[in-house]
Image (cartoon, rainbow, N blue to C red):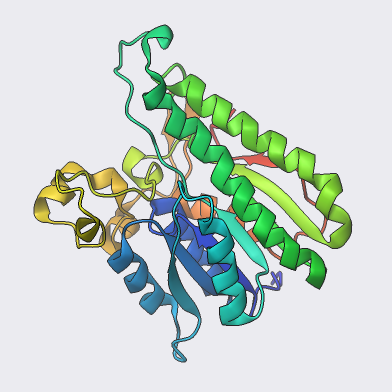
Length: 289
């Protein structure tokens, strides 16, 4: 059996309450890694996942707040992990905001900036900031792995696809540009571009607040109500019964689909000791162009 060398490694997953982030966290924990779960709003979800992954000693996972729109947040979240466990070995940057949905028949020139800016800007700035703080300690220790999760690949010609493409291209450029900067210090950095999945709900799950009219700070960390759940099925990770019922892979008219497990396995390998040479690449999963 291939030894991934993740036993005892420390991993930070941003966007850990989203579908991709939570799947990745579980996959790293299954390899014996210690996992810090960075969340934006869903505190109870993050703490429940931390309890699930903590293990018998209750010390293998913890939840930590992380805000995409706070420039200081990446520094503090990385510092929290380093203080808690003495260092950070792996960063999986899966946090992002979707941005407002584009009307299906809206033309490109009619899409207002406030609709596309969160999608594009939040794919770059938080990833750059978090990687900056994470890579400093990795360089000192002579080992590190960073994986950036690109926005999911929308259906060909789908509304807003051009903005997803811009965000993915930016992350590709970031990982390519950092190869020479950090590679000599034992740090490998790659991106993963998820392809279509059998269900949009199982893939497009950004770590964002419930769509409730109550926008007070106290409302952001509450448990979703039945109304929230009915309005926002894409904004939470799937439950255990839902995960077990998900297809393990299938075909669409456009080609093969991917599952959360496919994405998580790709992230685990790229961020493991078994990967000793792949860096500066964007791993495109089935159906992603």
